[in-house]
Length: 117
Length: 113
Image (cartoon, rainbow over all chains, first blue to last red; front, side, top):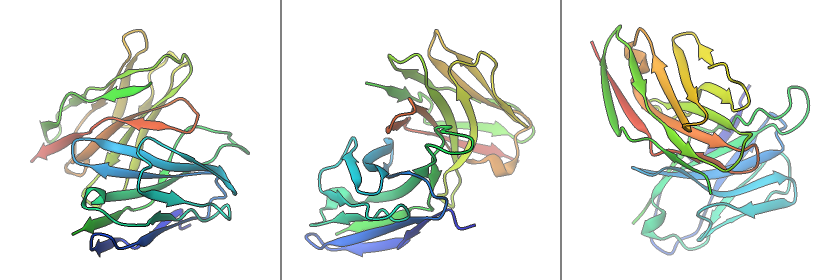
């Protein structure tokens, strides 16, 4: 049972480069999200999706792009990386319907550490 | 707006002793969920305990229990019989069941042998 899988685990970019963080879940969860974790600030929501074809902005969306073409995948794109985007990124999913209903619990991937030089 | 505040950036406890981590929050909603997540050095976010706001009974999971004071908007985590494996960053989180879970800044717990 893989749960939420993120790749890559580590990445170093130069300012202005683009990249995509991949996220896949095998739990058939409707809701998926991306958070960034910075020291002293906890986790902040970047973007989220409540189902295939539906995305919305979170607390800190600037500089990031997302799409949700399937239930399983929710990639996060950095179009032109900036040093301020140096962070640890977490993908998380949540079941919102079905047996047991929505408990509000987020299931997290292992995180991706991104450094922008 | 909903906010979560953890006023203790760092805490330490002696092995086998008890420690309490503090969390306060603010929300205008009456129905919501509260969580404590643990993040060990591996970076993995692990759910420790969950509390539904409409339930008056405090949640308990083995050595972990909470003191949920809804009127005071307080949600502290008590760890009994602390073990070396409890050393981690602990995050308090608030969710209204919509699409935005808010996290506190975290408390780093050190367990001394």
